[in-house]
Structure formats: C-alpha cells, structure tokens
Length: 354
Image (cartoon, rainbow, N blue to C red; front, side, top):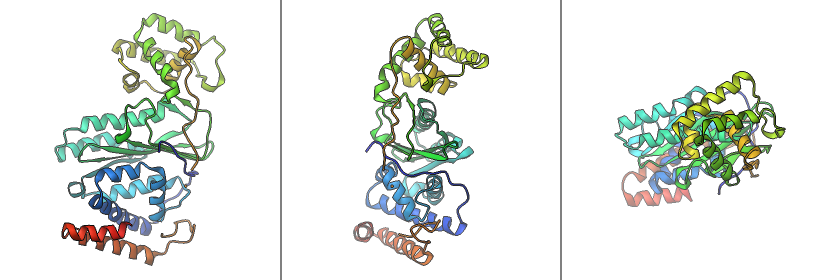
C-alpha cells in the first residue's frame, strides 16, 4: 500500500491527563507485545500503515476523526518507550512544533549513548523527509509535526503532519525506509487526508523529466540559468504554480541558484538537500523546466480515499475507564509472562494478539 486517506479535520484543545496516562501504558504494552512476538521492524511497518495507525489511535481512545490523533498518539508512543530503548531496540525522536526540529539532535544523542554508527544516515533521512514534504510536495499543507522512529538495526519510519488553516484540514504523511529507493521519486508509504487540491508534486513518477531538467540547468552555465530565470517574469505563466517575483524574492532565489550551481549537484536529491533550496526555488526551476524546456511536472495529488475503548469525544461512545484499565492489566500481565521463557512467551502473546 502506497497511499491512503483518513478524515483529519483540524481540532484544537488538549487531552485529559487521565486519558494520556492510560494511552501511554496501553501503547507501551501493545508495542512491547509486537516486539516480543514479531520484531522491531514489524512495529515500523504497522506504524507506516495509515489504516493500522488510525486504528491504533482508536484503540487508545482518541478521537477517531481528529487531526490531534496523529500528534497525541505519537506523543504517547514517545513517552511510553522512554527508558525501554535498550530492551526493546526502538527509539523515538521529534514531535510537534518546536520539538519536531529537535529530531536530528535527539538522534545524535541516542547514537552517542548506545554507540550507534549509522546516526548520520538517520539524521539525513529525517531532514530529507521534512524537506520533501514541505518543498517537493507543494500541496498547501505546512508541516508542523515530525516523529521519527528507528530501530537498533537502523531501519526507520516517519509520521509527520501538515496543516492548512484556510480549509481547516490536516494531512498526514507516512514514510518507511524498508520500501524507500530514494527520497525524490514516489517515496511515501502513505499520505492521508480527506481533501484533494491542485498540487505541485515534484516527487511523482510523472515529474521525472522535471527533476532531470532542473538538475541539468543548475549544473549548466550560470548565465544561461539566470537568463532563463528572468524570462519567467514576462512569460504568460499558468496560475497553478505562479511565483511572486518581488525584487527581494528574485534576488534571494538568484543567490540560492548561484550557490547550488557552484556546488554542481550530481542528482535532484542532492539539489533538494542543499540548505536554502526550498519551495520557491524548486518551483522556479520547475517553471523554467516546463515553460522553456517543455518538461511538465505532475499536478496529481497523491492522496486517495480511505478510516475497544470508546473515544475522547464520546464517539462511538464515551471511554469506559474500567474496561480500558482492564485491557492494560491483561496485556501487561501477558507480557510479564512472556518474559519468563520463550515457550510461555509464544503461548501468552499469541493468544492476546489474535
């Protein structure tokens, strides 16, 4: 499965403390059970599946149709797994708002603490995932949440979310390293939302020629690139990817293009990875590629349609605290038994995970 949709209208507010405490305990019990019965990698696979992730949030008792499900569930997972990294082999970094930008630092800290030699690759992946969804996939959703989960073997999954305040909707993006060939061609395991719009999708397969031409013109003579860049001010540009070429914007993009030209990128992914190369620069290159060189990018929105203990908002019914606590007790008891020996592990966990 590559893409899917979950209803994610923007909701504001906070989660009750009594519910978040229970969410952490149940999330830890479920994930711990999956690690013992399957593997750390299986946890990543399931979290990268939008259907499973949405169902997981519902089991934990959060609003099934709220944008807060993504951020709260990821927050519960991060808090739940703190201190279990050595035993479970799972690491969770990032989060919502300013915390999302701390992911590279947190990865580095875990790398030093547990002597992980692959942290530079993880830091690169974290930065590229955020940049691709903000700059290469220009769909009107501003990324504000980025949770990066990785294993002791260096495999990872990302759950990040963007918001569009104009239409009051959120869009969730899922990534999985297991299926990733590169960061700039069909990289997502899923993109979830219930709104489809006009999107400049520079990571679509159909945009391959645009990526090739964009890289070629950056590597070519800079004066030719500058001449082409100035042409787009007077051409009849299509509305769908118009860029405001104000004097300060134009000068800034020219400076970025010159820096990128000097670095001589070997690929589009390398070009995207450069500091300063953001949505406007990539959109300008795409515009030049189409209007001057005939390489049309894709405007296909990669979103497609899709959706224990009750829900925080009372849907389908108010959370039954007694039943919730009983579920936690039963699962934690099964895990304690599973730790005794391998035979009891198989018997206890298989019964609870059926």
